[in-house]
Length: 356
Image 1: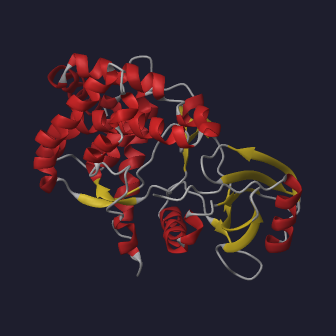
Image 2 (image 1 turned 60 degrees about the horizontal axis):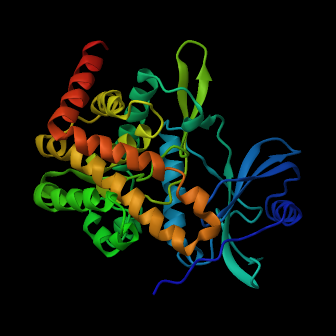
């Protein structure tokens, strides 16, 4: 049985003291930011600059190499022109420190990093346009394309074969499907799992493998108003789900999350796909499996978040924030069917690229 992580609960005064002692900065403003198992605090410094103080939960803090890799990846992407956070080194020259932090249940050892703060708002708070969706798809592909050039002696650590959010591990949802007992949605989820095993699993060998961000959701893509183009992507944050997967997984995950932000979710994938393929065109197998991969990700989001919320009732609102829309989207896509949905997706993508 896995150990329940303990989330740090620094008070504003404790956070101010930590930043002063380890980064030589004096906060002029502090405010808490959303997080699930970690603690994130926005900090504006008297000396100038805006930052995010990120305290990692007690369990994840036992694996510092994973966070070293995340930090390295963010820096690598930033150096290659992507809008990612970078890490401010401590006064002793370290990227992160291990601190004894009072988490409400005695002292716990937690990793601490101070990240640069990126301008913008979550894409969930901005009006979606086809141009913005195109840029989201293009940016997602650029992230993965650049990550394939990254080298690090501990890179194998990101294989994460047992990572339950990987689209390679969709069949493990059967272990959690009981959370939908009595819900008519269970039948749809079981049907998607069957299609995954019958269709996607058999073509997995044809998917191109790569290192992916793995979680370009409604909160992890930041946008900023632009005078001539509405909103533009201004930041990619939270590399906690980074793992070795497949290019088409990143695309499916991105499409799935963007669908939650649009009144007509089926229309979303076309511009995202067009942006993606401007960098990295899909092969035949990836194209044929995209529909079922998107549905599989919706099933992961529904089932896993519902299961996790049973263990974390205090975070239920955050965990289930997408559940209602996920249910509606899954029903709509499943009822419309692969052929009709793909016709919209691929026709829209082709039109979009023809107009470029």
